[in-house]
Image (cartoon, rainbow, N blue to C red; front, side, top):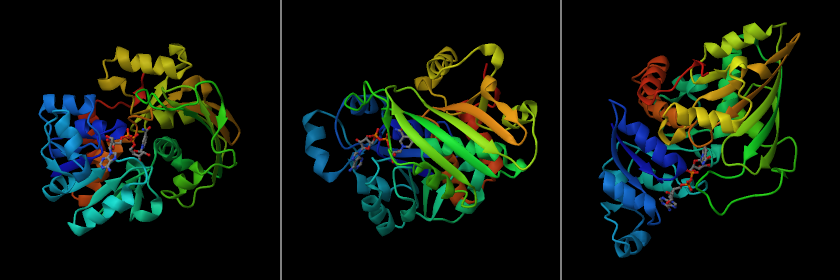
Length: 338
Ligand code: NAD
């Protein structure tokens, strides 16, 4: 299958690299709107670069080689992963529709513009035959993996405090740089509603604040189950869930900075951590109540979901097989990270 990545930014560049290591997928090309260091590196790697019609002159003036315009890329591809900035989706959906191509959108787009909001563990099978699928946001993907891990307990209620990173590491103009900002001020926040686009029956509320860091998000979750549980039982559920890793109590890890250092120590590409990272020491139970904290690497957590979403739409590879193929090819772990 020929896959195009429209929008080669934080998410798009990672999805493009993930496509390149899949045996059943081929990267037909990527697109960017502005010429910069990323376009120079793309030229150097020999990856086909397509641009919007209105940007051709800018790229040519910078001496960047382009293969064509975005409609050319869409035309020669079987499926498009649209990782353009949130809000451009509806405009590009029209292009994909006009050429009868399926597409995957990202969490910055409205759920109402797609046929399905997607998470590999929670609703892979529902994507079969769908034309437009949205991989939910990084925060939502993190919450869904944790909820999936505890699904056998029939969850009664969930509350989450979401501590969000202010910007991605390469974003030099975003902030805050010296503030803890409620975003949104309103509580509960909209994040819980996004979880319900995948699991409509779950009872959940969220609150969110932004802090001056670029590394990861951190979630503090409380879950009420329908029976008494022990810490060991909960940790065992996480140990047996794909794309969830545990930071053991013995590792003494207590921060996102240390998790990113582990990613570097492991030689991970771009020091990515696509797994949800649960702090074992934070997991605590009190009868039916479970408390835990985990970190979400916003730049990479949704990348494996995008790869699975491609296979899920075609409906030929089972959920477990797709997750296995994606995880083996990308080196994604489960169990104890350290
Ligand atoms: P980004 O700004 O890093 O990258 C966007 C890319 O799209 C850039 O390469 C830009 O050149 C290109 N682009 C801009 N206008 C374009 C146009 N008209 N046509 C084609 N390409 C165009 O964005 P991002 O952070 O990768 O976010 C992409 C999507 O993924 C958004 O929906 C976002 O909400 C979602 N998402 C982002 C993160 C994150 O932490 N960055 C996490 C999960 C989901």
